[in-house]
Image 1 (cartoon, one colour):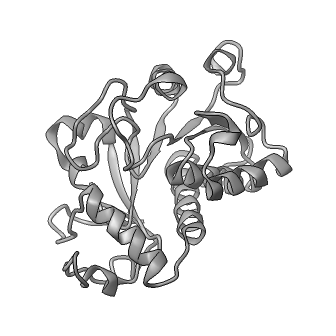
Image 2 (image 1 turned 120 degrees about the vertical axis):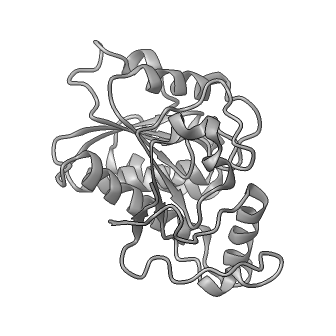
Length: 253
């Protein structure tokens, strides 16, 4: 992973701009959501392995928290890869499997067929808590809510955020810590307090707000295969070069 200086000229995007990036990927370039999701999850698993698991996930206990949308799907891809690499992965769903949107539901189906624990039902934080769950988890993956956040997390997702923050293990957040508005930087209650965040394609505007600093931790940027030319077209009109020429994941701060 390559360290990039904060003033490297990488632009930030708001939620509406990221929605446009996703639209253009699918409609204009025919790069489907399942491909973007695979790229995101692969890079998340790689970052987890290198940053938190000393380069070897075998035998490590990982809790992959997944919501119903694309963020959850990326966490489930990472869960599959880490499981294949020898980690003891448990899935913590923030909703019933039936509530998953179609492509994340496909990722969940794969994990169910692999027999990964927790993939068949909503999570129960009390079951996951210490001392019930021994040995303890070594790492949490936060894929509960991405840029689609609308208001304070509630229900089971809110319970999982509180559980993760109270648990003595580091949290690696995908795209943005759950509970943070990626445009305004508003920190809702509850919101994940991550040791590191791996955001996708371009960093999100809200993630550089002062109020967010304690929730993001280290900031990484990961490639999901957005063609640089996409950014230069209306309505984005942004100049973005080949950011990932040397690495699929770069550190911003």
